[in-house]
Length: 350
Picture 1 (tube, rainbow, N blue to C red):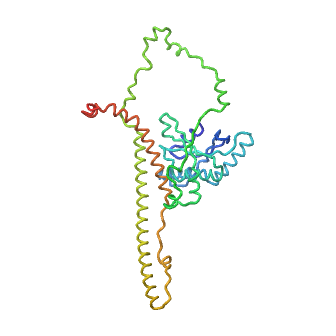
Picture 2: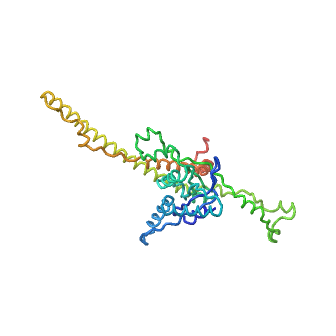
């Protein structure tokens, strides 16, 4: 509830905080959470959009900030003084329609798994999806293969082929179970049942005959047959198109690098052939050969762009695609059911 409250209060700004609990065998129990202090940023007061983005960027990077690390250690120290669970179990962040797969999230989780504990987790609370009535709370951890690749800092085509790292291997989603503490459960059971008010007693049917005359509370509800498109489906589709456009941009950058590399390699090959012919002529004239490795000083190969952003964007595209599939399931079923009335002749062949 503390995570939900914090994320909902600062929405649409990104909310972050740290988790404490206990590590019991194969289970990681999270018993409490504390938000990081809200970051302050000096920006022009007239630029509200820039102000919101700057605050979100600072909040997203808060888990690995030095000041917040000190704040976290002090909080854990005080929790141990009162003899409660005070082991670092990870951190949490908010999301909007599943847009949590980014570099900040990866850097934060890498910091926790490397510096704190390799079993720490990142809990993601999606505010927009939870507003539809279904709680969206998920737990993630970086895979060992991605941890090794990120530690080396090499995300070139050759290194990815050698390690066989795919975008599906970046995050490991862990099963999450939510339950009340024993103290809260005991408190709920100790609460007395409320006494019905006179108005509530009067509204109840006194006999079985009167019950049959009252309107059926489970009468058909035709609101579920509404064919309007879910607004969350529209927003998620727009985000999916933006991610696909970003993917095409990264692909064009890599293709430009390949063209530049091919041109430089052609120049190097031509220079090496020319130098070999010169050395052959000098050998016939009984002269000392010229060095054939001068091309390393004369030519400079272009630097290959990192593939990390492409991997993260591909993982984000997969996340959006799953959400679109989930949103479209209900709409598609209703469309097929009503296609006979929407399209003339469509129901004849079915």
